[in-house]
Image 1 (spheres, helix red, strand yellow):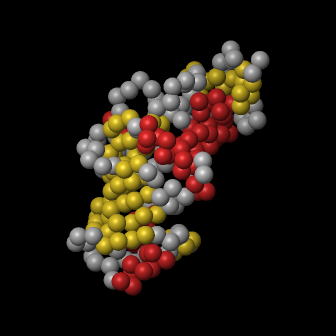
Image 2: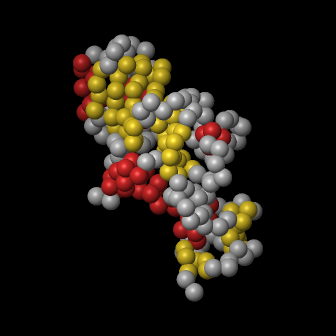
Length: 235
């Protein structure tokens, strides 16, 4: 009888990425056949009853890959203790999906969602160095010297950011491309120069582009888009 690692079983059920599944196990939120399991090396076999947060889960066969134009005001978690709007509220499908990485509540634009925990984990892992493109509207114009600092790296939370690509656009709009995924990184990069980001929108994630997707709208990734994503992490 085939044995499956518990965290993989949870991931394949579309509940969480592999890393998040490991956290669920450590936190004692997973039961196998009625018994709480905290050991990451635990395995399950066909016929075992696996529960997460008291609910039975089963592996999902069909994988789904979505891009959405996230509006400001939505959080990119699956639950929110403050009862704020959740991004998955906008996606009316039976299959449960979760965000690939995150976008801050006050940031709009391109966000990927899937039930493929393996691909999600690869895409957000620092070693993948996936480029993310944003357009930021700031409260005042940056000097050439300040632009150069952003491009070379600035201190954020006690650590230098990696080099970024930054281009001035119309008015006080700046296009910035980074391949890190630190918390509120773009806003903090501008804040290090005493600049406040008024609006921030993500335009691209790797080969996936927001394009003309309407605010709050979503669509299934095309085969070409999906293949491009896979190539980014299978180099």
